[in-house]
Amino acid sequence: MENPNYAPDGLGGGGSEPFGRRSSYDDHTARMAQLIESKGGTWDGINPESVARMRLQNRFQTGLDIARYTAAIMRADMAAYDANPADYTQSLGAWHGFVAQQQIIAVKKHFGTTKRRYIYLSGWMVAALRSEFGPLPDQSMHEKTTVPDLIREIYTFLRQADSRELSNMYREIDAARAAGDSAKETELLNRVENYETHVVPIIADIDAGFGNAEATYLLAKKMIEAGACALQIENQVSDEKQCGHQDGKVTVPHEDFIAKVRAVRYAFLELGVEDGVIVTRTDSLGAGLTKQIAVSHTPGDLGDQYNSFLDCEEITAENARNGDVIINRDGKLLRPKRLPSNLFQFRAGTGADRCVLDAITSLQNGADLLWIETEKPNVAQIASMMDRVREVIPNAKLAYNNSPSFNWTLAFRQQVFDTWSAEGKNSVAEYDRAKLMSVDYDTSALAIEADELIRTFQAESAKRAGIFHHLITLPTYHTEALSANNLSKEYFGSQGMLGYVLNVQRQELRLGIACVRHQNMAGSDIGDDHKEYFAGEAALKAGGLHNTMNQFA
Image (tube, rainbow, N blue to C red; front, side, top):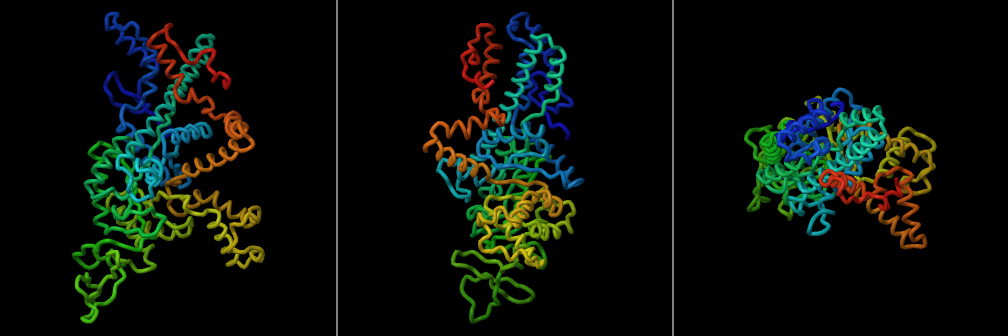
């Protein structure tokens, strides 16, 4: 999909269709003029070109329009990645519509296209920043409706970014006409015709489904109706859910998880989003516990495979206790070890094997993408699991969490140190492995090599480990904290107002960040356009001579 775009179909139909089949700017204007004329003069106060402009500023009528459109983008991107792993995709996590909007505005500004750039919606950030209970840990304690509400909010802001950018183009068209510059007018109209929307796919976190399969289905519907084309679900127990990078994670048997995956697929199909994408996350690498013993009917079936990883002890008449759960393994009666929490534990060292089984099982039961949660960013580790998965399912693909929970600097400096040590490199003696985070090493050869590995991590792992989508779950949680720290330090200190001007406003001006004209970003000029449409010369507009935003023109 070379130029992802969208526009409304005919008059009043409420549907949507791709740009390749849409009415042009002139066609919209002509059709509106015909409709207005048919009203016998009662609609003569309506400008047909103004209606055409408003229609083109509102190219998506519903969240389902967005979900169908963005799902098609993801499917095309997945096919492109299969053909060439260099065409991987990326996203940053956003916790507010404005944050997501500014990310995509920046992407369009710096790269000229949104192609292969998405938005990630993190359950962690929703819990920490959007719950009415206040900041919460990532344990599915926040309100279920918060995630669909945030999806809807993000797309409201992205659609407003379209409206704002097109509004600016329309003003340029009017200026070109007033100046008699027909070539400029034609060039601008062509830009409108080929306009690329800010609306991009969202991969949204549904945690462990917030309950049973029915609860998962109901919440999935809300998220899809809000615009989500891709839902990510994890194989933890809903009421024991933990952040993927913390301890105490409890997984569920595969049949339980598959039921929730099916529930999500039913939600997509019911709502007509047939290209909807399901991302199944396995936390088994760091999860050593299960709440249930899987049902097994025949040796070697899925339940038996799940149970084969349990840490067991042989049961005897002497050590048997009331309430024991007993399984038969190779003709022996075994008791899975039960903890005081009433949970059962897996054998140590089985995490990777369980991840591989989880991944294959998910793909064989309706998943489109995998997510293997790891404890560190290491291409070799990820590839070692994905190679095994791809022996069974050759086009298996990952969405990978480039998590801020990792100490990226330390992890890659350690990797370089260990590689140099294994190679017998003499210069390794200059470094103390226990102190690799020291600022003293920041300009060292080891640190420079480690930074280069970090820089190329996404491209290399996309090629080597089957990672189709690289995301950072909660980057803007950290950027907000960093910027607030720096501004507070300067503004409340000796720099005073210069702390803001030097480090914020002047940087906005020098970098050409549109938000320096915050009234325009918030929609003031769009409002002025509408006032002129509605009231003509009587319109009382905000963007006049005395608007201080003119200082930033």
